[in-house]
Image (cartoon, rainbow, N blue to C red; front, side, top):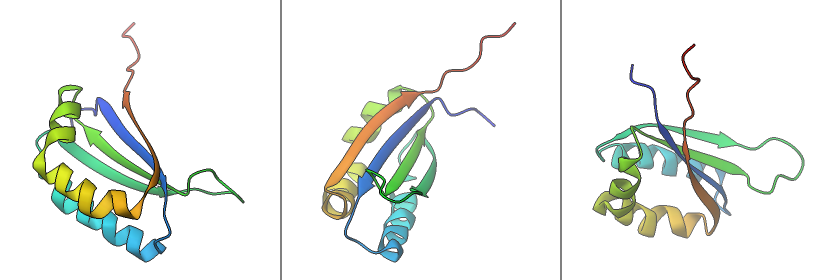
Length: 104
């Protein structure tokens, strides 16, 4: 299996229920998974008494070239504008390049 080179991380808060967040995540997998170079998804929930952000959405990209393709893709634009952004107005998004250990 080819290693993932970029992780697109979104931490967010929402007034939606956990069940609604789960439904959004399933829809994200169906819709955004069609974009070339998107390789996987994860959803997480924060632990602790009062985290700054409650949820984590991770979208794995094959490489850095997918960042722009994903951002501008009509499927992403439609999903982000009609589903995700209205649900999660309080969010922070960052792309991380995976650093692989140097071979000895």
